[in-house]
Length: 164
Image (cartoon, rainbow, N blue to C red; front, top):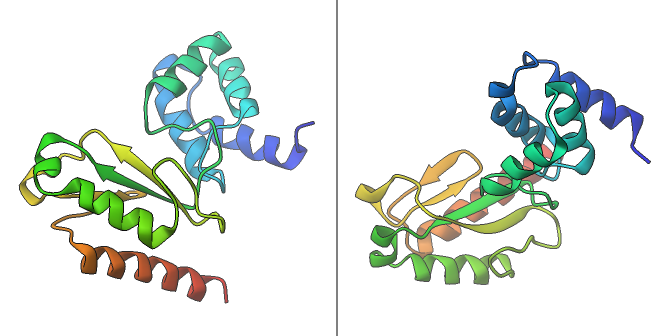
């Protein structure tokens, strides 16, 4: 059963866009960004398809094609490690290992507190400053273990302050 309050919020988000097919990606991004677990629900896909007059399979196909979308719950902060050739040459593997150790999860998992999800990204377009990581919309470059620890500590600290 769908939560009527969530449905209303979903509908409000969708209706911010004209009911035209070219708005599909923007609608999906808005829905995912506004979900507390950073993912697209089955209901969100259904509502989007209905609003745009598209078959659900078309909306689902787009949502599963792009790696920036998820159909499963994720953490509040999505940590994407660039795995392009340039980042690999600049030790992206070490960055992944360090983050897995710091967060206590492996790639593709979410921390038990729901704060972080660790993912891989094909390219973040930051080759000049590799290796790179994107946390939600912010990109961090020239990473080493100390800088990674600082970033994770800063995010955790900001969340403790926000929850007071």
